[in-house]
Length: 97
Image (tube, rainbow, N blue to C red):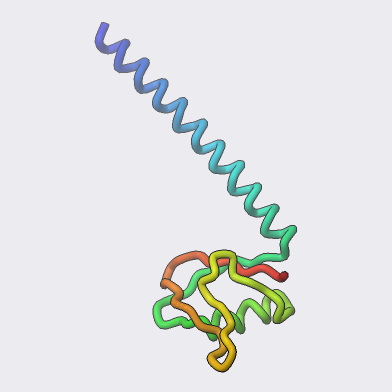
């Protein structure tokens, strides 16, 4: 009888995992559509890459200097240019305003 109990628990667990995977896929598709609608791009950087490069990349890819980072990692400051502290390997998004 214990075997069937464990089998039932395993089946419930796998069913839950499948549902979570489905929700994740739907969320990823929704995020992708939002990014496309808002004219956004995503990218990651390597160690040593600074905000100056990131701002230049976003401006070139989006074709405008009127853009923003969705998490505020880089900002423009008068007299200093594009400043911030990006983290290597993290995915960043910038969108045209």
